[in-house]
Each structure stands twice: as structure tokens, then as C-alpha cells.
Amino acid sequence: MKIIINTDVLIQNGNNPEPNDNFVIEEEDRCFGLSGIVLNNISETNDIPQYIIDGSIQKRYKGSYVAWLYDKKDEKIYVSNDLLSKQSVYFYDTDGVILINTSLFDLCADLRANGRIPQMDLKAIQYFCRENVFCGDMTYESDTRFLTAYSYLLIDCKKKNVEIKKLSIPPMKNINEITDSEAVEELEKRFTAACELQWYKNEQYGKKQIFTVSGGMDSRAVLLHMVKLHKATSATTYTYAQSGSADEIIAKRITSKLGIDNHFIPLDNCEFVYQRDEIIDANEGQMYYAGSTGAILMAKMTQREENGIVHTGLGGGEIMGDICASGGDAIQDQDSTLTANQRTNLDDIRRCLNFQKTTSGYFYAFSPFLDEDFFEYAMCLPTSMRSYRKLYIKWYKQYMNSDYPSAMSHSLALKAVNKVRRKMYTLLGKRNPADMNPFQYWFDSQPKLRDYIEETFRCDCEELTGHSELLEILSKFFDETVIRKLAVLTVTGSVKRMLGIKE
Image (tube, rainbow, N blue to C red):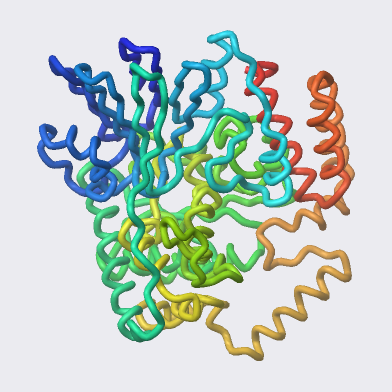
């Protein structure tokens, strides 16, 4: 969907996969629309303009979407996406030119069409090479920002400026306010509600129930919960991992016992790394491309006419404890009373959504862990409850099928044994069957892979010859670990697209 309003502002959203809830309504004094998926029921469209203006649409409607309204009388435009920014929105606001796009590469093409050369943000790129993903409102382009969670845009067409409006975030709970049992019960309630929304949305569309499943807690929690609620024996699952890995073995054991169809996608020998250009086109360089693992392979295997919502475990481990920061519950931002952990959670959503971004041209990927109500509640739980997945493991043990324990809930002795085994594999330079992507092993053992990485970087440098400062930074990172080499290739591939060197 592309909307060009009779102002200097361009709002653009690419073609969404079917099905979706897209609509545009043109009235005498305003026009408004929505593009994407809303999981809960949309109320009367007459109410939507006010919801967009005051930002309440993000609290009312769950899903992945962008909504906008143009007030012709006041010459103001409001742009909202879903509360957690699952639908990306990039915006450029410099010298009277305002561009808004759900695609960073398309926005840069619009920039070039306006006679402007995208300028690379070298500090952001350095952060990306270290962390393999951006945080906050960073993008590659120095004057382009990313609309983060709990915020929306107000554009004044007369003054030609953009204001970022913030929504309130609930305060952290004090450890004395809630018991572990109460927290587990509330998590279960919200998780169940999120699973139901996803399930019935697919039924509404008349689509198959498709799941990703691995050996980890997150995806199996979603699958087991859906099976418990709906006896989902007609579901289809996809697993992508190394052949013979724990992910393959556990996923096949679970789906076989449940009588569910499973498709296994092997990631052997790092073959997916050679699909760099296709993966970068899909996820627009928002996370190092090799982190997409088999997402693009799975997307290509699915039948588009069957695709509705694909159920995933995106963000489970992160929100339930893996990204608890050392700052914990300390207030980090006095104006908003945000704690260090809440800020980290809000920033890290982009990392969680890499799979969704990569597959967005094929289907919508949803996760109950990133349901707005579940996420908000979990984000506000005290650090002591979430550290080391403490509460997550309690919840999992209480509500998931005991036939499928998670490695995170193993005894301390078994965890110690597994840790020693991982070290031994590393020391011996062997492939660890527990690793989804043993990049160092592949790099050390495969001349073809080493040659591909080296040659790709060399060719990229030749095409980016005029950007010496950028290449100097990237060369330093390229000389480090395999993961950083792959992050650098993500940057060079993305920069070429933004500059129009590769369309």
C-alpha cells in the first residue's frame, strides 16, 4: 500500500502478504488507513481517527500494523504503528523533506529521488558490528530514525516538522508487591489470551496453523500451549537446525508424540550464508544476516496460499530473563521513570523480531511472548524474579507438559556436565551438536566458506571505494571473529542498497 497525500509528506508501506487487514478511508476533511494485521476485533472505523490522534490505537489494537491519519483542515498527519513497533517505521525529517516508510531501503530510494545522497551513521554502524543489531532509534542513515516502542509521530505540514509523541509505560513492580505464584498465574493468564488471539485470527482467515519448533523453551512453550488449548493435531511445524542436532531430535520427538506434521530444514555446512543478498533484501540489514539462519529457507518452503499467522516463540527467553541488565530496577530515565531493565527490554525487541522481519514478505510471524499485554507485564516484573529465567522455569514446569522438560530446567549437575561438554567441543575444534550455528567450526573447517567471506568483502570494498572512513572502521571489525565478519558483510550489503549501488 502506498499513500501519497497532497502535502510534502510521503507515507509508504510496502506490499503486505495476504491475508491482512488493510484499508484506506477518504473523507471530506480527513483520510486515514491501516496496513498490517490486527489480532483483536477492529471497532467501528468512525472511532479510529480519534484513536490515532491520541495514540490510544496502540493500546487498543494488538498486532503488527501501521496506522495513519491526515487532518486536511489542520494540515497535520499522525502515524502510529503497533505498540511494540513490530511493524517497522522509518522516518526522515531534514530541511523540509519528510519521508516515512516501513522499508529503510525504499526510504533511501525516496531520498535519492529527492536529490539527496544517504549519509551513513558511522557510530551506529560501529554499534551494529559489535552487537549484531541496532538499538533504540538507530539506523544506518544519519538523518533517518526508527520509530521505537510506545511512541508515534505527529507531523505538522505547515511548519514541516516531526514530533515524536511518547506513550506511558507502567512502572516496575516492587518485589514486595507480588509473589512468585501470583506472577506465574498472571503470566499464564496473559499467555493463554495471546495464544487464543493468534489461533482464532488464523481460523478467521481460514488458514493453517503453522508453528516453528526447536529444542528451546520458547517455541515448544507456544506449541504445547496451543495443543493444550485446541488439540492442534492438524497443525504443521517447521524446524531449522543442524542435522542430528538437539533441536532436530527434540522437535521430532515432540511432534511425533503429538501426532503433528514436522518439516525439517537442515542448516548443515553453513550453506545459508551464501544467500547473503537474498536475506539482506528480506531483513534490510536490521540484524547480522547470518542470524536469520533458516528463516528465509522456511519462508520459501511454505505454501503462500496456506499462510496466515505463523506461531513462533520470538522473544520468550529475552523478555523472561536473558536480557536482564546489571542496572536492574534502578531508574535510568528520571523523566519517564524507566528502569535499566525496561529500557533494555524496549531496545532489544528489534533483536527478537529478526525472524519476523526476514519472513515478512511471505507471512506474518507472531509470538505470544510479544503480545502487548504479556510483554508489558513481564517487563515490569522485578529483576530478581526474571534473572536466570527463574520465573520462566517455574511457569514452564507448572503449565507445560512434563513429558517435555527444558534444558534450562535441568538439575545443576546436568547443567555442569553440558557446560563441560561444550568446552570440550570448542577445545577439540569439533562441531557441537547442541549449537544451531557453529560458525567458528564451519569457518575453520571449510575453505569454501573462508574464500566466500574474504572474496565478498573484497568485492564490496571495491564498490564502496569512495567511502574510506566507513571501510576503515569495517576492516577493523572484519579482522576479528567470524560473527563480526558476517556483521560487516551485512553492513556492506545494506549500504550498497541504500546508496543505489545495488538495487
